[in-house]
Length: 389
Image 1 (spheres, rainbow, N blue to C red):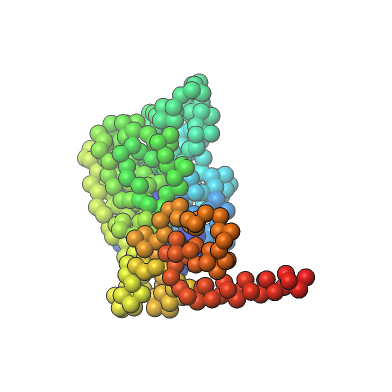
Image 2 (cartoon, rainbow, N blue to C red; image 1 turned 90 degrees about the horizontal axis):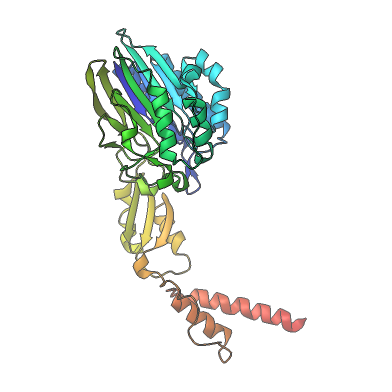
């Protein structure tokens, strides 16, 4: 049996105000092509299809087209909601998606109501997938009571509640099937990718890898954007995001995972690189040095650290040289020290506004005569108006 594991598409995500839907479309087309070429039996999408719980119409069209294209390859397509998705909306579209060969699971369900998905591979081998969409602390107790059919103590920790959910959903694992778990959550020991939503990735939302049963052939995870495997008695893998969503992820490896397994053999995992999408890059230098990087950075999207003191018009100079610079900052070595924005000469009652402003600029590491001249003109204009009144 051949499976493809992917997650964290974040369709609709922009970067510093720049839309990336074209890039996201290229990446998803590549995933469809890989699915077709590898003749996989199922595609597991472990949450965060969208970047927002209220995605744009264009983002929704892209995701719908992609899921239908994946199903058209002959693969089973199983999708769960992540913390960025709107679970109720995914559940609302379950009947339509099911008619197209796509299984959507937005909220936590009992095994009988869709919390366990079963299908047959092209070879005839059976697969059982226990699916656990993202679960907030707010609903963890309620979900545990629903699925495990036993009282969950309000004082119980998040991982204990998730543990009981996983146990309930995997109780039906069979010896003659490939048993899979797919979940969107943080597992202890996992490394952040750089673009996750911190408030829903912190320790209180973490679970140990030991919650997954020994008879699982593979655990497909989403939520952490870095490709990684975790130490556990069974194979536990994050596929990572197929496209870096922020500059904190610029050094991540973007892949999808091909999993091969039988009911009697352990899963074999192969990373397949994703080559579509523009690279994110951080560059450092003076304005003159940055001018020499134009041919080197090509079409990369850039974060620029300027190694000069701030001055008026510097950002425009940099973006003229490097049009793909989405963020321009002063290198910390040249920035004003924290807390240095207040002039140090007392109340300033004995100094002119121009002198105070000059000291302020010096404290902020801004050395530009034009700024002081503009301040002088504006101050003179305001003073003239006030005197006229």
